[in-house]
Amino acid sequence: MDRVFLEVLVARKRSALMMFLKIWGMILTVAGFLGTSMNLLFLIPLLGGVILAGFAWMHEKTEFEYSYFERELSVDRILAQSSRKRMAVYNLDELEAAAPAGSYHLDGYKNRKYDVKDYGSHSGAKTFEMYFGGRTRVILDWDDELMQAMRSASPSKIYLQ
Image (cartoon, rainbow, N blue to C red; front, side, top):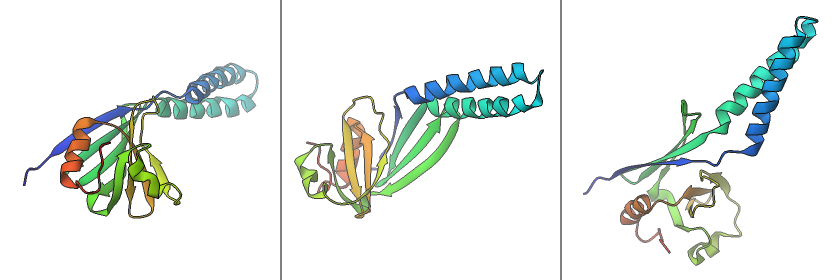
C-alpha cells in the first residue's frame, strides 16, 4: 500500500476583537504603570492590562496544521507561531460523509445535532465538511492534495463536488 503523509498549514484571518483587546491591554498597562507612582491600587489595572494584552497577542495570529497519515487526520492549533496544541485526531474509519460545504451529498446531515469543530481560516476560502461518528462535524479549508489523498483512502464516503 502506498503511504501518504501530508501537512497543510492554514492561517486564520486576524480578528478585530483580538486587535481591540490588545490595544486596550496596552492602554491599561501604561495607565497602571503611570498610576503606581501615586497609589498602589493602580497595580490592578497594570496586571489586568498585561494579562489582557498577552492573551490577545497569543490569540491574534492563529494557524491550523492539518496532518494526514495512513487514514488518520490530525489537527493542531498554533498560537503566535510559538505554542502548538493538538486539537483532535480523526480516523477515516469513523467517517460518515465528507464533501465541500453546501454540497447536496451532505443534505441528509443538515438537521442533525453535531458538535461543530471549525478549523477553517474564515477568509472566504472554499471549505470542506466532514461528519464523524454521528457526533462531530469538522470544517476544514479546502486543499486539493489533501482531499485527493483522503478520497483515495475512502472513496465511497468522500465527495469532491
